[in-house]
Image 1 (cartoon, one colour):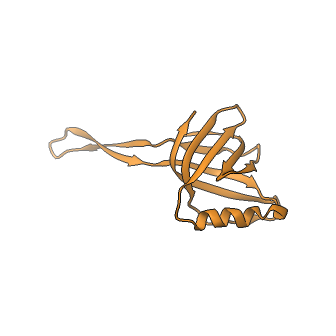
Image 2 (cartoon, one colour):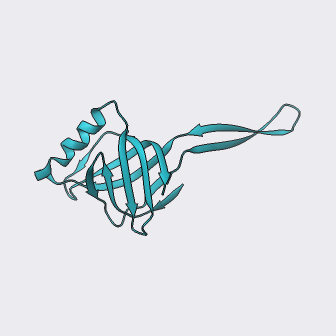
Length: 123
């Protein structure tokens, strides 16, 4: 799982600026492996597929633009959303994802922490 600060993320056409000091975590779709022991003492690998994920990303919400309401509407939908995110180092991620955790607005910093899951690829 990669991590680092992000510049911005575009969710279904709306751009959100990210906190520069966040350590955003990115998990590309793939497999996780578990090494297990069989009854005879030999070992084998159990594979489990996992989806892409972006977590611990805090975006600034502008009350004048109803950003929090926009994010809630997106989460309420039953559709995956087009996502495009840019890290501070210029790395770009694209995907079709959905917001998975309950949205909580932090009034002191005017931010919302997001977790998104679905298709994700590094450009």
